Length: 271
Image (cartoon, rainbow, N blue to C red; front, side, top):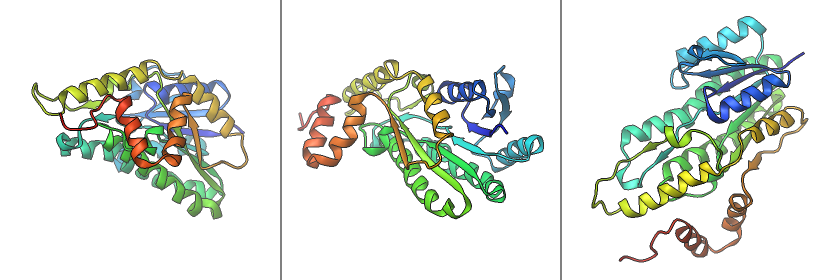
């Protein structure tokens, strides 16, 4: 029997690539986003807003009517944001957390009773290598993805008695349209952060433009769905991105911070 997969944030980018790969390899795939039903997709497209309980319940009900089960949940929907912490707009903070963290919890809570009833299921949460560090001008994004990591750790323990597994995938830079969709604080000329922020933002964009092919994540998830016992975390990025996680663990904090400042060309002393 083909497994039924629900993936959020599937209208474009990483989510769409994963959904396309899984449907081509024999899975029954439901990809969701706010207005995805207006688009032509290779998979089943269902409108679902992860910030709305009613929208989530409606989408899940639609899937269960067709198949009576959901075997896999891939929480992929997310918002990027770049801003100095000092200039973050609280409305933007709430939007990011409502999508990246609370939306993940909403969707997971809605699916879990059905997975428990069938005594099986897999939850894959898309995090980020950026969750392992407080990256400059991406502190809120890093924090939201760190929350995803910790939530997943707890889920693994809580769900083990019910035959349900959970894991995170931590991507590095991926060639998607996240640059276009990322929330970016507009800093006026003369703002104390502007020069440093603009330099860092260009490097952020470059890391995406030169990032991994999203297809690699479809291949990884296909393998994970055939793996009897999942590890907590799967990290997929360029060698330097994965190395940065190891360096943070082994280097003195001052040395690691200096390395990050040098990479993003952030002054180490007041000018």
